Length: 281
Ligand SMILES: N[C@@H](CCC(=O)N[C@@H](CSC=O)C(=O)NCC(=O)O)C(=O)O
Image 1 (tube, rainbow, N blue to C red):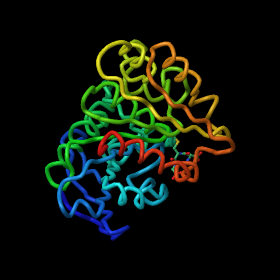
Image 2: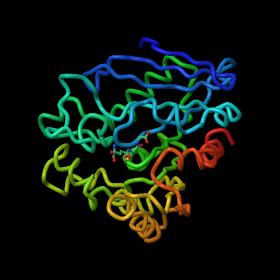
Image 3: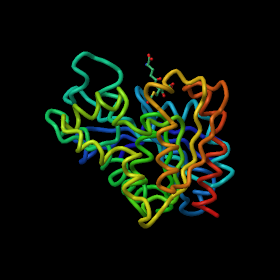
Image 4: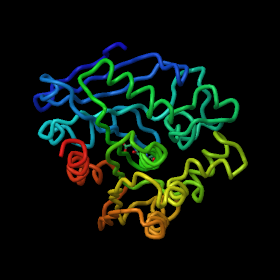
C-alpha cells in the first residue's frame, strides 16, 4: 500500500493510504489515525464506517476524534464508503444515495454491481488484515459508524461474533428493509427477493441472534431534529427489536441535534470511551 498523506495530530499521525483491493477490484483509499502510543507497540483500533456521500475524509476532518483517541491509545481506521473508479457502475441517474459513496456495506449479488460492490467483505476482512499486517494495530477491534455506516457497523458486528469487541452507532439506518434508502440499495445490490435482504438488516439479525452466543451492548446516539429520522432511520424499530430480543441497547435521543457531523462531534468522545472500555479496559 502507498502512503498518500501524513499529518501530525495530537502527538500521533493521521495518514492516508491507497491500495489495490482484491475484494473490490479497484484502487481504494483509507485513512488511519495512529495515536502516540503506537510508536511503542500495537494498539487497538476503532473502525469507523461513514454514511452516504462520504469518503475516508469526512470523519477524520469533521468528527474531532483524534484528541481523545490519542489520550486513550486507540487507532482510528476510516475506509471509503464504496468501490470507486470509472469502471465501477454507479447510480444510473447519478443520485447520491446509491452507487459511488453508497456501498451500504453489503456484498452485492446482482449484476452489474456484484463485481465490485463487496464492501462487507472489504471492511470485515481485507481492510483489517491489511492494517494489522502493515501498521502497529492489533486484533482488538471496535466498530462504529453513522447513518448508512451505522447500519454497516451494526451488521458487521452482529454477523461476526468474536471479530469485534465493541459497537456503537450514530443515527443508524437500523432497519433498512423498511425504509426507502434500504429498498433502493438492497433491490439493486441484492435483487428483488426481499428474503435475501434480511441477512443484511440489523433488526433481523438481532432477532435471529437472540439467546445465542455473543451479545455486544449497542450504544446509539440519535438527534431528535434529524431530517431523516422518521422516514429512513426509525430508531423506535431498533429499540422495540432489542427489547423483544433482550439485546442491551443504550439509545440516547439528543434533543435538537441534526444528522450532521456537528452532532457526531458533540458525542464522539462518549463513543470512544465506550469502545476503550472494551478494547483497553
Ligand atoms: N448530499 C445529501 C446529503 C447526504 C448526507 O447527509 N450524508 C450524510 C450521511 S447520510 C446517511 O448515510 C453525511 O455524512 N454527509 C457527509 C458530511 O460530511 O456531512 C443532500 O444533498 O441532501
